[in-house]
Each structure stands twice: as C-alpha cells, then as structure tokens.
Length: 99
Image (tube, rainbow, N blue to C red; front, side):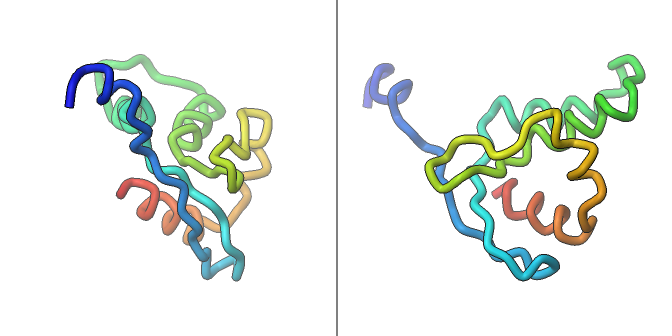
C-alpha cells in the first residue's frame, strides 16, 4: 500500500443501530480522527471555558448520526431539540459510535 492508496481509502463505515429507548433503528458513521479529536478536546483543561451551547454542539458534532447514504443528519441548529432526548439513548449511541 502506498500513500495514495491510504489517502484515497474510505475506511469509515455506516451501520444500522437499534436504539432501545426509542425502539427505532438509526444509522451511525464510524468516527473519523477529526471527530475523535474534537471530543477529546472537550476534556482539555488548557482550553478556555465555553458556553453551554458550544459545549453541547461540540459534544454532539462527533456523534455520527447519518442518513443511510452516510451524509450527516443533524447540524448545530438541531442541538436544542436533541439536548432534550433520552440521555440513556444518546449514551448508547455514543458508546457504539466510538468503536
């Protein structure tokens, strides 16, 4: 394998996941390195304090909720409504999405 092979490789997967708390199936895309980095940055004590809205968005952005074709399902405008959803459901999704 050479540099071009690696850079052109599509190594993210879209998988169906059943959310028990919702009794519904959703699709998740595996996290990219950039997604994971944003999530880890939330725990960086060197970063300045952020507003609650910014923290919620930074927590949600790495969650790869997608449509079947792999395109993102939610954006920052959806955060207020998503923040009202079941914590158990979102925790289960987060655990699966970090695999």
